[in-house]
Amino acid sequence: MQQVERLAYLIEYLWQEENGDKILDLPDTEQARWDMFRSLINVRPAKDISKDFIDVQDALLIQYNTQQVTDITSLTPYLGNDIYLWQGDITQLQVDGIVNAANSQFLGCFEPNHNCIDNIIHTKAGVQLRLACAELIERQGKREGVGKAKITGAYNLPANYVIHTVGPQVRKTPVSRMNRDLLARCYQSCLEIADAHQLASIAFCCISTGVFGFPQAEASRIAIDTVLNYKRIYQSDINVVFNVFTDTDLKLYKEGLKQND
Amino acid sequence: MKKLANYLWIEKIGEQYVYRMTPELQDDVGTVGYVAFMGEDDIKVDDEIVSIEASKTVLDVQSPLAGKIVARNTKAEDEPTLLNSEKPDENWLVKLENVDEAAFNALPEA
Image (cartoon, rainbow over all chains, first blue to last red; front, side, top):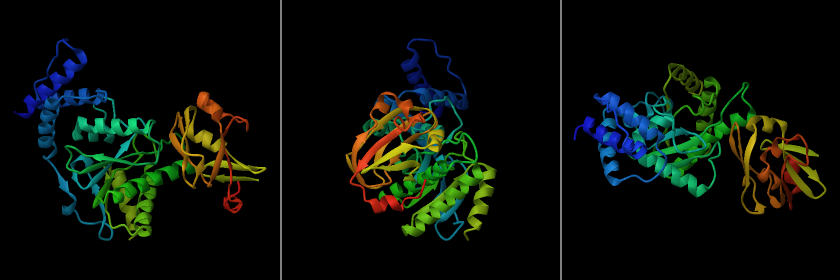
């Protein structure tokens, strides 16, 4: 099956599940079909899905996700021998664990095609990730608190695990002491759970700096300080990638890491 | 005497230690929509004692002291916005006994 055919199958499945016999206007191109598939899977509630769907989805995503992969072993450390700085899409990074900036609902982003990390991680990992998160949060019986971390498989992503953490939301500056502490606790909790699962490497996205509004410069300092302190205090030899997406963050992390060199 | 730890005020009243919301914490979390107490009565430092879901955050509050919880503000579970109140008889979380007074004294002054 070609990717366009897989997408057609997946779209028809999701469309029918949601809309029944209502006429589907299936787009022609692979890109348009991908966008439609993504929007449908983004809004799908966490409920069981057929094995056939998962098989076709996995075949699609494996091919899609292996197009441009960066392996951590091909990167050069930026600081010491185990701190890396990498600009790019975290879903294309082959490391042991990647950190997802989740929200307290914990089920991944439900906004169709939303350009956030939670959305792209869930979309490219596959529908199984939302189901795994739903199981964790149901077992917990309440929404996920800020500053903690939970680990799941990464399904179709090049990484092995996804570590989900909910960062603080900042509505006004200066950032309060509590929100600064909570951001630090996010990094700490992710490292703790990564070490508890003996992960060799972890890639952090810039937690809370997107729609959650944490000022980027202050967030980068907290991220760097917390990670370096943790590694020193606990003598952890985990490889840490600071994954940045924007040029602003790249510059901030370069400056921040240089100060620790 | 009043102390400040884990963003809470801790007041010693007789033999009891009362945790309460500070105005800063109330501002940080926003309007409280859901409150759930959790855990055992006997607690250690940093044990989670209550989950507060509010307009700006979901916060699992940790205890800055070890001791035994002898009262919880369960009214706040029915009426979560009590935790946004200025009134001391409404905005408290838990009351502890069997607390090491030296540990209390070592906390920062409010």
